[in-house]
Length: 337
Image (cartoon, rainbow, N blue to C red; front, side):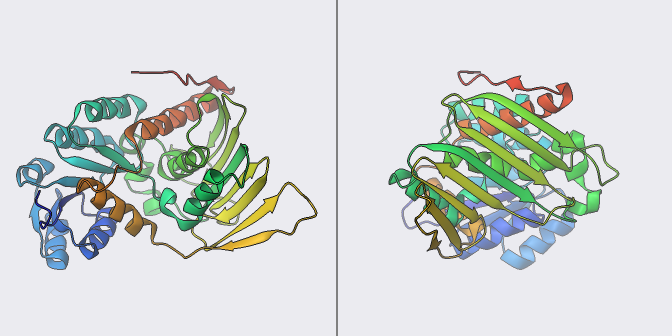
């Protein structure tokens, strides 16, 4: 790819999330193409972006794109991602990595052997409060981190009203834990710099819809160095909607709403006032797509790694196992496939 040549990005899956990425990548100057089985979705994409479209991802890859953004049901991730990686094309998969840990491991194995890279869309990393929290950790303002607590709670927020693929376990692999839980699990681990996990305790529930998948989940992760993580997520329930994060350390602690514009900072000295740290609001998808585009162009390394996404997938699997068994389950930090 020449320096003066626009990066060519293929969007696989032209539904809501595919169009979200397409809009931002178009604004960033990428040359777009699209692929979808649905002829109407392809026609709408052509009309909006004046871009070439194809009936499947094979034809899209054959067209010579530099990278693909994959926004299709979780079960289809593996085939599209591995085909793209084998073709030397970079990949941004919408979360989660896959519908099962076994499928996720096969994608990760393909990525390790590929010339291109594969990353997963954990957009909460790109929020400015998150970036500021990482800066404060790196500059020592928090001391040794001990605990992160994050919730992602909706009220009346079941995708598709409970009638789409998000509530079909054969396609999604699970419910809210696969949809929203992945975001906060990654965010908590990211804030702690991905420490080794040794134990997972979780409880999933299906309380408010006519579907078999979970619509709420609670989990506690214990790390090898004593750090802990607690996460709570729901599509619908008797709680105020929230995306609240609390970070605790030996020197200071933080509280922030992930999509907000302010963090509260407290020190270990109870006599010191609570500080408000202002940050600019950020379009998380725009920031994510900007960094993906830069990585495809070779200007930076990908922000998320496939190994981190695989850890998140294994944590999800462990939460489901813990919920089914009714007890904590061990988590091998040295596991290599």
